[in-house]
Length: 71
Image (cartoon, rainbow, N blue to C red; front, top):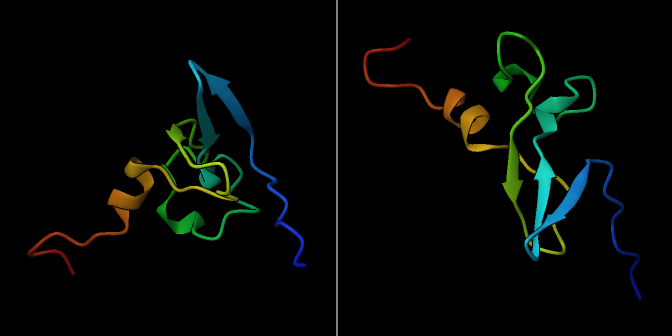
């Protein structure tokens, strides 16, 4: 039987929903620190499933997309 991966990101329960802080809340541990805010620390929380071990918020994910006309 495999061991469930351990979550290192902060989670909280609110109104029966599980929320997790964006990986870019700690750029040193984040898989995608280049997508983080210019201030360096993201404070966005996202609703996640019970087996989620890490999350990238929509704001940071949006920074990964190049718009038409961008190099």
